[in-house]
Length: 323
Image (cartoon, rainbow, N blue to C red; front, side):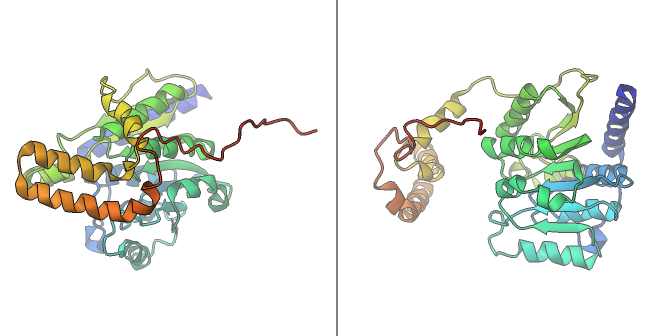
């Protein structure tokens, strides 16, 4: 049994190596499938979907559909493999059109095995059993919110649904929060190992057009690939993390403040002030005050600092065995 699983690990690693060399398995851009994932990321998902195509107990699940590029690309490579995409389309959708685009792409190419779950990712993971039809997640693509908590929740809440040979592909691993959550997951779950990591020198937003074009052909904005390895056949391998915990400590300092929800706008204002940019300062100040109007009613009744949000919680409660 252990030897069989080792052989499968080697097949996955070989699949990643082929992807490193060849990129996309099938170029679907002619079918209108475009997006913001690197070609190697899409190519790996295509190959992994095909790897599990004959497994009647397997399925593909992704967090973060956007406009359907990865979901549809994977589904088309394995028509018998159910492919589920979870997204409530609450972000990266200023015109409110991403769900329509994703559904149009599913229908347009006849990807009948692709299904959208229009829910918040955490709620969807809590009730995912109802959508799996007894199958287990064999390919799990994590590309949802990239804050630390969302990332670790995506990993932890999926474990109970994972296939024995599950492969997890974590996108946007350039972000420090993403790498930290992956490292912490691996530290707490020694039955999983990282089998591959790749990063780009910057976020696409900070690249020149030529740089962006180059990295779009690769693992755009980084990737971590994990696998089940209950017998510890692979050595421990962790993504690089920042040993300075200042930013994480600052999260606690910010979250307890009265107007914590204004933190991004406050930091943007601070950046403008420190940079001596009067025009940027005025723009940031307006953005901060606009955000304040949204949160005014909720925030004004709080303490200036050390808000614990514990009022009304139990003073003592037991969890006991019944019977």
